[in-house]
Image (cartoon, rainbow, N blue to C red):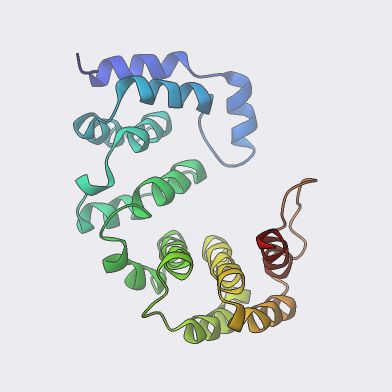
Length: 220
């Protein structure tokens, strides 16, 4: 029997943990979900496009996180995706929306370039994140030199989310395209974007030269 919206919301309420909420609020997120338990709930509900739409419409972060786990990227048209992206979202919802929906929709390429140059930080960041996927998986038809030109010109002063995503594209070019690696490294060294980003022991720094170097080393 399918899960109703009321049943889903009741179950979500039982997953709220005050300690998790306090930790998340320090990072700008407004939920207390234990994500492992949230994923277990989504697995039990299974894919449910209709329930996903109802959950998203509540505007509540726990409901939207569950919606992103049980939706199908193909259920949304271009207008839906654009509207959802432009809504004010806490970081975890935005991150999951980009990774679980935008990177998997067949409409990604149709939307990517327009979003890259959008004045809204979150929208532009999504466009650059989709560009990183293209660079890594299907670069044919991309002008990688032009992308590096744009990164070199604009990344230093870009707003935070867009800057992060542009930096990801810079690193992805350097990692996956040896002929452009020296230029990518040079741009990263000169701009020093995220050079001082705090990185836990054993984790790879997002500073592009360090990121490129470590990924290339792993490729052996």
